[in-house]
Length: 162
Image (cartoon, rainbow, N blue to C red; front, side, top):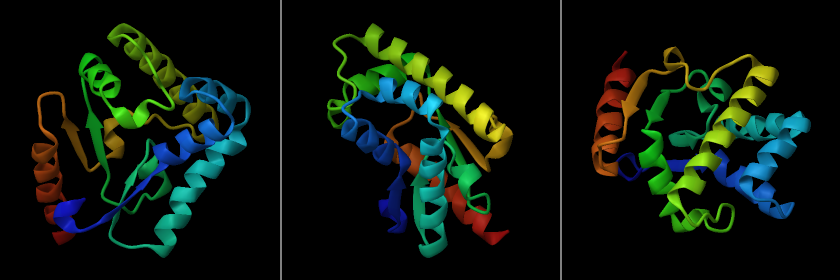
């Protein structure tokens, strides 16, 4: 996060790289990982290991709260239609999810959401969308990235004081 001068560790980038290395799109890789749980364990372990040797950083990960429970945990939620539109317009996703329509993007996101929930429950007995796992929950549907960052920074500073 630029405001705090923190680096970012992105599990999603790692997941997408693994998918690309196996010549799979991200959804096909999700299906593959369901049958190969050691990959999920490797991904979550990488975040945990990173946290052991680094301070002052942000983990961008579905289960970051689980991997590093002592952290300030933020859940960003968004309306599925807005999420699909954002994803469809994100140039950084084109090499791992290349959809032509908003409907295709949305259907794929819903499928991945279901696959992830099944995998995380089978492996860890957790639900990523259980808001009780987080210190802060923000609905980003109608917020700009700067507004979201301001809210996180404000609440994070309060959390540090506790």
